[in-house]
Amino acid sequence: MPLVIEPATEADLSDYVDIQHAAFADGEVGLLLNSRGPLTEARRKMYHERSLNDMKNPTYHYIKCVDTDLNKTIGFGKWRIHPNGRTQQEVDDSWYTPTPQPESNVKAEHDFFMYLNESRRDYMGTKPVVFLHVMVTLPEHQGRGAGRMMMKWGVDEADRLGLDAYVESSEAGRRLYESFGFKMLKERIWKLADYGIPGDLTATNAILWRDAPSKKVV
Ligand SMILES: CC(C)(COP(=O)(O)OP(=O)(O)OC[C@H]1O[C@@H](n2cnc3c(N)ncnc32)[C@H](O)[C@@H]1OP(=O)(O)O)[C@@H](O)C(=O)NCCC(=O)NCCS
Image 1 (cartoon, rainbow, N blue to C red):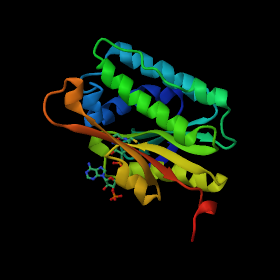
Image 2 (cartoon, rainbow, N blue to C red):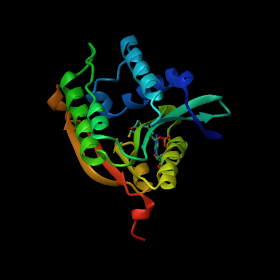
Image 3 (cartoon, helix red, strand yellow):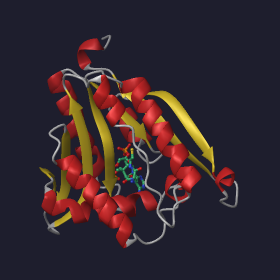
């Protein structure tokens, strides 16, 4: 199973959007955000444009995990590296307001992204940091080590640059992040029934932080 990590470019964006959709559709957060159905053309265009814009920003680093036997990309990581931190203006500008689509659960989208915005502002703020923004593996290729390789890429960068690291962790990723030394700062649980979704399911996300190695007490 020869998996390799390579930089991702504009030519990979279509795969990126598809894999992101497929990976997040599976979990309870996908259900909360009503993204379990097929990816609509409008949403595909929106994600594509946003990612293309992000790619032009040198603080973003898109990587992909390729299965060289299949000649197929099976996962992506989107890291942000701020070796010198961000200005308050940059922090304010990064506040994300979702653009509701016809299929959106508007209240759920609002609450979920406000939680992300507030957590990023409160914990990362203007600090120098490495931020794992997105990590996704195609569901049928999960459990083969792609996630661990994509994590190692960013954690190695954090160690090389002597930076703390931040991630918003899904339930699926939590154990993996903790195995790299991330520790929980905050956890949020949404009751899906509060958003009109029948049943008693919950969706969970946690804010995890990893101190730069120089700060660790040995
Ligand atoms: C989180 C995610 C990227 C991990 O990717 P991955 O390629 O499966 O990662 P790995 O193969 O390196 O496995 C990581 C760990 O998860 C476990 N795992 C992953 N998929 C699994 C599966 N389908 N069944 C059982 N265990 C699984 C692995 O055993 C491994 O644990 P271990 O290292 O303690 O043995 C992937 O599960 C995913 O895309 N999830 C949906 C999107 C998401 O939640 N992304 C993270 C947002 S912060």
